[in-house]
Image (cartoon, rainbow, N blue to C red; front, side, top):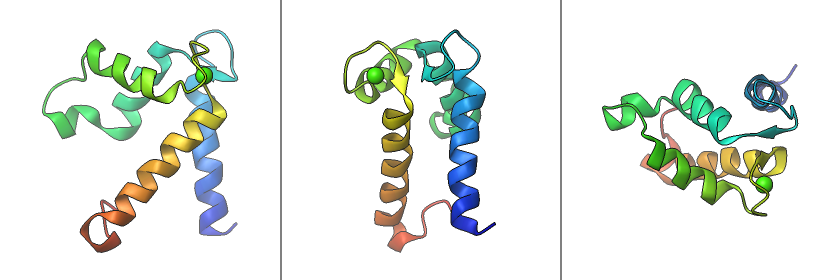
Length: 97
Ligand SMILES: [Ca+2]
């Protein structure tokens, strides 16, 4: 499998891993999103402290574009691709990769 297809599969696997914990396996609840942000994006390490509920609420509100009360796969993919774009825009495209 190519690197890009592997990355796409990983992106989907991560969504499925967290979305399946708390009810509907096709969406992320606020708790599931908080767990994902902590475990997969290392928010504790970036901020030097555990991400607080207020910060999770801000992320959740920003990602839930249709205000459905959950983050669906499209909203999640938009978020992850935005992160990739931000990484390309910083440090001459080197980012953390
Ligand atoms: Ca939504």
